Each structure stands twice: as C-alpha cells, then as structure tokens.
Length: 366
Image (cartoon, rainbow, N blue to C red; front, side):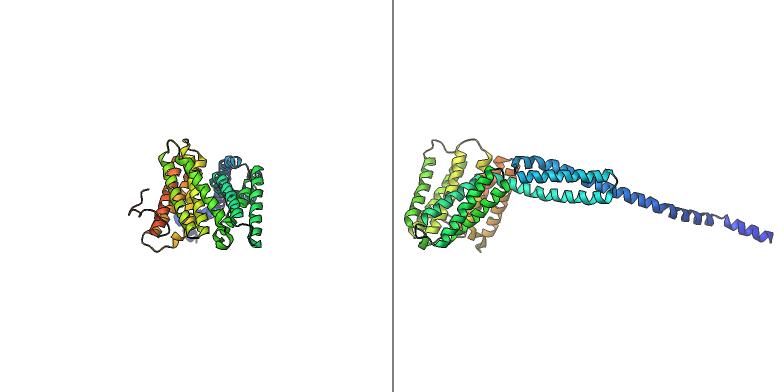
C-alpha cells in the first residue's frame, strides 16, 4: 500500500502535471492581460482621433478666417468647443463618450473642410461671375425689347433680385449666401439666353452689344505692346466676335449674343494680362474664360468625330488642374493650364465642326 501511494505521489510531481498547472494559470491570468491591452489600444485610437481633429482644425481655421463668412466662423468655433468637451471626457476616462464625440468632431471637420476648400477655389471667380450676371441681365433687359412676354419679365425680375441680394450678402461678409444666390442667378440667366429666339430679341439691341464688344477689342489693339498671353486671348476674342457677326447676319440673334459674350470674357483676360503684373484675379478670369468657352461649345462633348472626345477630356483635366494650381497660389502654372484648356476646347470644337477658324493641327499646340 505504501509503495502504491508513493507511485501516485511521484506521478503528481511529474513535468506533465506541472505543465497542466502552468497552462491553467496562464489562461486565467491571460484574460485580464488581453483586456488591458484591448483597453490600451482603444484609448490610443481615441487619442489619435482627437489629434487628427485638432490638426485639421488648425489647418482649416486660417482658411475660414480668410473667407470671413460669419456662419462658417461660428461653426468652426462650435467644433472647437466640441473638441474640448471630447478631450475632457478622455481625460476623465469616460472613453465611450470621448470616442463618439471625437469621431463626430473629426467627421464634421472633414465635411466643413471640403466646403471651405471648394469655396476658396471659387472665391476669385465671384467678381467675374457678378460682372457677367449684371452684363447678361442688362443685355437681356435691352435686347428683349418692350414686347417681352410676362414669363420672361418675371424671370428677369427674379434674376435681378438674386443678383442684388447676392451683392448685399457679399458686402456683409456672407460669402456662402452670396455665392449661392449669384450661381442660381447665373444658371437662370444662362437658361434664358439659350431660350431666346427671333421672336423676343431685337436686332437693333443685338447690334448695339456687338458694337460694344468691338469697341472693347479696339481699346486693346491700340496698346503699344501686347504680351504673348494677352495677344493669344485677343486673337480668340476676335475669332469669337467674327462668329457672332456671321450668326447675326444669318438672323441667329441668340447665338450672336452668346458668342459676343464669350468674346468679351476673352477680352477681359487680354486686358488683365496686358497690365503686366499677374494676380489671382487675372488667373481666375482666364479660368472663367476657359469655362465659358467650354459652355459655349458644350455640344462638342457629344461629337463622334475621331479624336474630339479625347481633346475635350484633356481640356476638362487641364481646367481642373488650373483650379487646383490657383488654389495653391501657383499663378503662372495655373494660367498656363487655363490657356491649355481653352486651346484644347477650341481645337475640339473646330474638329467637331462647331466653330470657324483655320483647320486644327494634328497635335494641338498646348
């Protein structure tokens, strides 16, 4: 009996038994270790989210200050306060609340950041857009004559009200509201221009507008020296004005108006570049002209002529690149990209048979 008991005790002291005890002990002790590690990783994620939000806020605040819209500044301040509350929850070890608030804060900052960057991109164009809307509004009021329909009169009054309200909003620093109203007016006025026909356009008024464009061109042509970029824009304006004259002679008054307006946008570019010093406003005018040129020949996008789609896509890419470069303050590259976009668009339109001018080269000079 004693021998058997000694054998049992001996087996209990074998390495296998010891391993079993150690495994059980490790499993029991490992649970809290894993839990601690998980908690630590979760806290690190919250800390990273808070840091990302803080860094993004510091990037966006100067942009919001530069734009100066009171509603945007108020929203940024609210997001700053929200971040401080989330940080307080984290410091107080209220991790679930901190995680939710920090993520909401970061998501909202990303959304407002996208809006601020888009607005910053468009900011240099506001004056150009305002000028064009007032010009088109005046043009439509004069060219439609006293016999305009009640519907046209209603839309003209509505567009004029939008332009006036946009001006007041801009003067008051409400940039977002100003852009919204001015762009709505732009859409409405462009639609009205497209719908104009012989029945509600007077040839006398259209002739007056054509002559005004020609006087603007003459003021640039008599300059003692015209830089290459300005000369290029002037040449494009004269080509567009020539088209406008041909449409007018054929009785296509609406097309004559749209061409002469696009010619004026090219003349603004020429006038700005002839001044010597390059500013963001001149670059914005060049980009706006490229946009207007592409809107004038928008039918090109649907052309099935070989190579036209590729040229049009390249023009769109160059236009987007110009916007990005302008936002980054790269004025010379932005101007070159805008010029390339205009050249590509015009070459595509010529190949599609939608405009006049010399036959386009096989490879456009961009």
